[in-house]
Amino acid sequence: MKILRFIGKLLTAVALAFLLALAVTGFGPIYRFPGPQPFTGKDIFNPYAALDTTQGWKRANFHTHTRVSGPWPMNECPRWPDYTDSVYRVLGYDIVTFSNHNEITTHPYDTALQVNVYEHGYNIPKFHKLVFGSPKVIHWDPLLPLLASQKQFQLDYLGRSSDFIQMNHPYRVLFNSKRHMERLSGYQIMELDTSISTENEYWDWALSWGHYSFGLANDDLHYPDKHWKIAIRCNFLQVPSGRYEDLKKTLLTGCYYAMRVPDYGNGDWEEKIARNHCLPQVTWIGLEGDTACIRLSEKADSIRVNGQDHATLALVQDTDHMAYTFKADDPFARFTAFFPGGEVIYSNPFARYDASAEDFPGQHHATPTVSWLLTILYNLLVLALVIALVRAIVSLFRRRR
Image 1 (cartoon, rainbow, N blue to C red):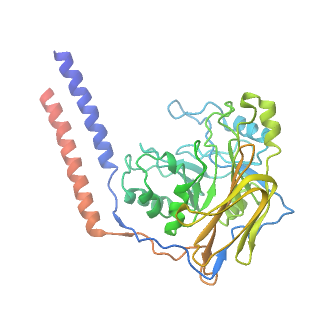
Image 2: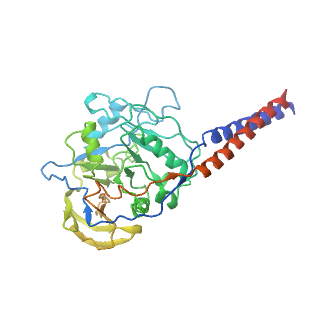
Image 3: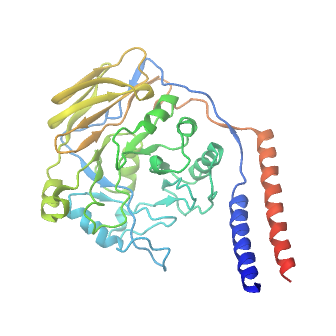
């Protein structure tokens, strides 16, 4: 009985300590979020204004995990950066950046290609972000960010010491909701595509609320030896090199498109490699007056235009091109092209704005503000919970003595 009581007290202490950790990391501000602010203006933002058809596209993956220094569980990946990079190069990739969890990884062989990027987040729901251009890792992270305010504070806090942020796999974040996606801001890139859907509706929820962002599709790679894990998503950029300053400029101006790629060969690496070198591509994309246009290297089964509230604005079939003329009440429009082989191309959004006052759509929209009254009340509640948990732990050990 004594042993059972001891085990019971020990498990209770562990549970209380876990709850205490959740509570201690839960302090933070409570925001008032502005309502929807759909894109408006007499002009249409063209993310492909800098397109140079003679330059060609460079293929890239930005969300890549590798082995790092240190013991398990710091290592969730079996291969070092140089090996992972070599596999991507064979598959036709020009640019690979290493985004390990809470660690800035040194480029394995060329310091000129160093990109300071890491995946931020220890939290249980997996609200993760890629943080670009930060000189150091920010380790602070609420362990259970259930509130939109907790997520917003993370984005604001990380944004102060970085160049830009990508919101990672929003479709996999536990307790995420349309309401959160509509309210959050402070990121510049949305990670696209899911293993089961090409809809990217969460992107449209945010765009419809007035939060403009570009889109990247990445492998989120952990196992380069598993054929079904690597080269299934990628991005094609109009960028002169893989140097960070070139990447930064392109990623923040939008001259790129994202892509889903099938697992060619289903284990036959020779077929996978060969077919990854002859993917369908965008040959031209841009704006002609108030008409957004796209041309492809081969026929797609269909090309769709999505807009406000994830509505389908237009659809064409069995074609290698499409044009969509903005209507007066269209805040934004983006292309998705579906190919017979299973490939899917996602364009960045064209959106209304005022070119004389804004560099990009929604630049001067109202942003979340801190509600000091709600912040004080919320943090007092968290403090009371922390005190109660500490007392419970102390009381537990006093009874034990």
